Image (cartoon, rainbow, N blue to C red):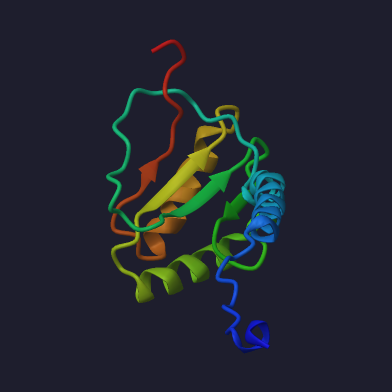
Length: 142
């Protein structure tokens, strides 16, 4: 009888093995999907030694001019689809109205005509961008 009256203490251990399994599965999923999240248009940027933007700047507006002279904007439903000049100006003007301190950058392919990059810069100026930066790659070997 004395055995039955003794209180049973609850087990206070947590089995963490299932949590580790879930964490490892999530790690694999994120490792597989991370490269797919990088969006953009493939361009060959010219090389130049320039200082990078400060880390505290907000995410910039990027206008890309590919080798055929088509324009792309990293804002909108489909940033990997070309946009026409009127759409580019309207979207840039809307973003700059809501966030006036947003940096505006132009990524021009090294093989595109210089006039196409200048046309993109003029469109950005007409949309209200106070200044426009050019994106380059660091020079090879240095």
